[in-house]
Length: 275
Image (tube, rainbow, N blue to C red; front, side, top):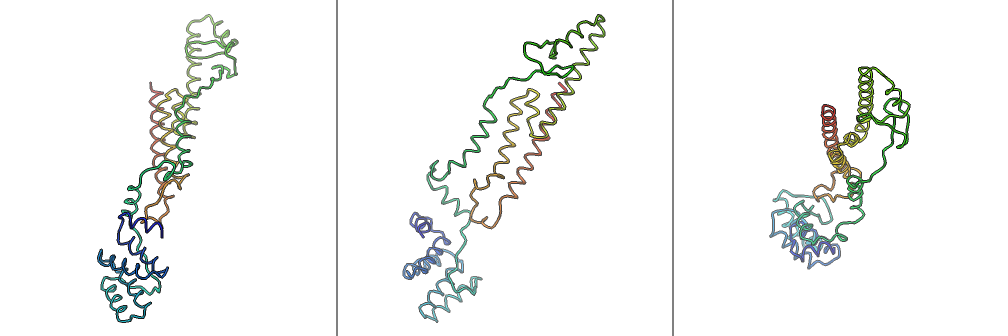
């Protein structure tokens, strides 16, 4: 009752609000208030429910002729019901937004801070520059090597044993061929890992290939698209959607966004290999 009274006395006097508040008054036997509001609702619109409810009020007071008159008026407005209780009118989506947008926004009032945490966590995990030391592996034999034990030929990291074997080659053409073979093997290895990682999380493959900003943006967009699906209670359904589940809609949005990000990230990775 307090919610409807607050809406009514703050100027939100839609026919649904007035009719439903009158119904509450009638349930609590405040017939004078109920009759006043029913009269207001009947004057304010062409809905048949207020006339039907007024007919019930008259019938409750054994005013049969008046009850029949209001019931007939309700039928003239294409409304009839076999209910013995007052009939509510479902508020429209416009009523919902009118009430919500007219209220001052209070972060710890209307918005539950618990529901903001997923967005904060996603932002922190996505964009803050956490730096981890990269492991070193030999591009030829694949063994893990320490930073002090590594040797480097162009962009390839090698262990001392493989580096010594490569340098012991006296033939210049053979050395170039070996360098090219090592480079090609490493690029194929990195490409396989990048595609696998990107298959798990769209955009992660771009991060692996060094395109950090683009990859982080893709990951951020994908994670945001999944927030409504896993945290559906973040969103308040409009009044007209009370019986409609939002989960299929959120799933469809996540699927579309995820598919687009998959396509974009794989195309961007292919362009990186082309470069």
